[in-house]
Length: 294
Image: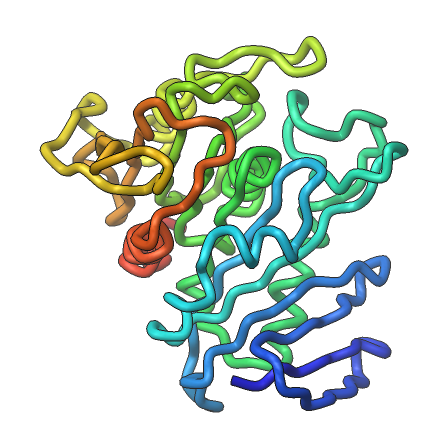
């Protein structure tokens, strides 16, 4: 694989430098905020490819996200581009996303991260042919909160999101999407930071993992209750066996899915198993933006 260093000088001028590593770094045109981009060797000009936007947690970074979740190897096999953008830094020098009232714009900067993430997609789409019906978000913790925000506010751009240890808006009136989005919540029952059963951050409440999904089940028009399936997954290598259970809503409209993968005894930052990225990407790539959901 090649690494391409792409610097956006202006909207119209790009400089591309080939190096020998495995991903690309693009500096976006919005406030000069950088993001890393993995491009599989199987990418072919003229063939639209899926795109995943992977969002780090509070105080983390694009580099940690890229190394932690193991997405690149699975993306290479499936011809998927993966972007790793970085949030802005707060007064303590920690990166964050301005997601929901609960997390994590602690300094009340009101930075427009919605616009930044959309600009990431738009910049990539100028250089590579992206399947606009197969754009996805995956976020951990604060990045999970941000993934929910994007599904609520910019549902027109995303087919599906994965929130790992994140949560929805507490107030359902804050989430009025104009189209349906598939939702996967992955959460550990022993998460002491973003509690599985819900809680507060800075005095602002956030819903439980199940309540986050129940809100989206209503949005997606699902007809059943959340039902535990017989499926079990090995998502966390620090826990022996197939520790994770799969619960689903059914009858969701426009081909959407709303699922909860519960990591039993899992903590806030799971140690992804060798199958974690495969299972997550299998879920995402099975979803395509249905025109009927618009």
